[in-house]
Amino acid sequence: MKHELKDVSWQRRCLGWLIHAFTASGAFVGLLALYAIYQQEYLSAFWLMVMAIIIDAVDGLFARIVRIKEAVPQINGELLDNIVDFFNYTLVPAFFLLVTPLLPDHWRWVCVMAITFSSAYQFTQVDAKTQDHFFKGFPSYWNIVVFYLFFWQMNIWVNMVILLTLAFLSFVPIKYVYPSRLDYLTHNKLLRLGMLLATVLWGVATAGLLWVYPESNKALVSISMSYLILYVGISFYRTWVPLSQSSEIDSLELARQS
Image (cartoon, rainbow, N blue to C red; front, top):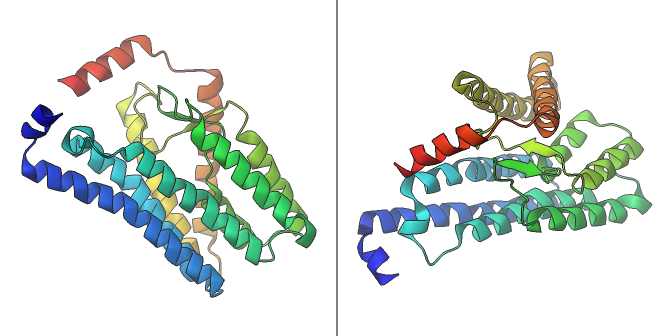
């Protein structure tokens, strides 16, 4: 261990610690979101949730660039990321559901319990993220789900059915696309780039819906919903028609090591 640290420059070590601090800042952003919910400033809470998602989306890329396991070997970055993600993707939206009228009064606690228990299972599976970089089971995107329920303003019983169905799907071994890890989505680099750009476009469109709320915008709704259909469709397709991995995985691993 000491020998490995000597081989790492102090600049890389500093960058590694800064990246871990950046990841940890997501927990503070989530705490601010909880406070905004408590203050009934729901739009502010959603913007803070957006900020937490952005942090989560880019910190892994930064960590891979600096090879953070070598730069800061004494910190378990995956554990840190999971702690922050469980807080932001599960507990913050669960609290939102508890204090807003999106669910039937007498079923609210049942739905929130289902969300927290299913997320605890999903986060702690040994293969929660598969070797080919997919999520196994519904990946606890509860903050995104809560946003759509808030935006659509549907019947509270419909909301309950949606939430309980997604909680159940956490236990079903369907592979869901990991938007920032598309190595094994397809052999075609242009298609992988297209999926990444579609994800970014979805993020912009969904943020746009939040910006114009309580008004709506048909173009933004169409983009946001089209991506959801694309995401689910590709996830189901790759579950039943896995990518031929043998040569592709070997070549990608060799490329990373070189």
